[in-house]
Image (cartoon, rainbow, N blue to C red; front, side, top):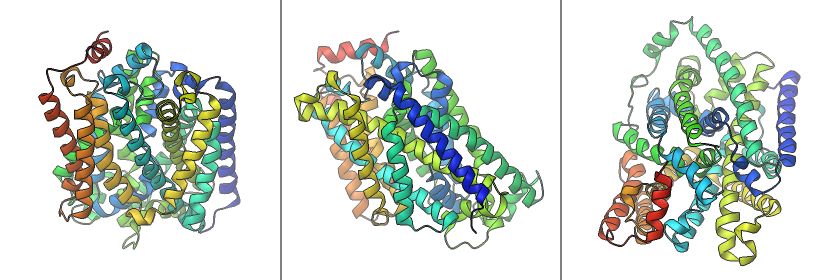
Length: 488
């Protein structure tokens, strides 16, 4: 099916809006603090919405749409539910710590405090590991949006990656956090409109509101269950722990949302808003994906289900709006990631490599050059995504296994309970976690839950055990830092 002229106009206007936001934000950024943390002036409702939508990308409408088609309701349980619960439960802990780190230690990058908390070697290991991880994670998102482009327009995956990545490359380099935040809000509004219309259209196609309850009887056996092998209880618990780490700051761009908040109270409110949205909105957004086996039976490639439903069910004009929102989802998520990675490279890695890149002298020019080059790297990875297990393989296996390993010394290091966990515990936990990851990729475990959880669990046990052995040797600077961020 070809897009109508009206759909193409809608897409064009939406991208024009994104470009105008980028230009507006370009002139708003006067220094690196504006570029990386919005000057610490991000209101809670914008922060919460941005935190929420930063968990979406085109991958949700490709890889997760495929899982919704083949495994049904279980994707909500292990993905959205676990995120919502962990974010809300931790709302008065990690968001508060991140704000205090900015206020009391003047951080702009989520890793800046690690040199004081551990040492320079630990900070550099985590910085380099995280940058490499994000190359793969963002590459998967370019590949996901390329699959959607292929469904809608017939453009090859290679050209889809180059187009989506190239447009975002220009936009992100303009960017800064204000551009990311405003784009997040715009795409959230578009996503709500498009998602509600798709929900209503699918209900009408299925016979009315009662279909919310009756459609499950028409789906394959197991699709209505909370757990559907291999997405078992164990897998959900593994992702609960991984999401606890990643959505409280293990994903550095999400830590930036809290760092950029003006007060501890606003950071907590942002977390509650984001968590509540995760509990409610996916139930509406995913319903068409869950119903897809009834509307599009026997699909050879379930990852195309959402794109085909959009083309077949929505009226002219709204199709273009949905496509634009999918682009915006990916652009906002990747620009958010890349903005934070640029902060890490500019303020943590480059100063350690060469003294001329002192943190005090971090310039907008350095930030934008770093952003441009890193984005190019993610596009190169995206062009090779099939070699890494496809989109789903990149997102679930690589990201799920590695993000927790890097996040453990970062988040546990903020908790006074683990004050005795020093550089040996941090580096040891990362190395053991990476070793466990290598094992999971080379040994047949016959369990997706074990494959995903083994690296992060190994990392956590190592961190706590080594810290226990070192419990009598806590440097004064570490004690003081933890006291500073724990006290109101």
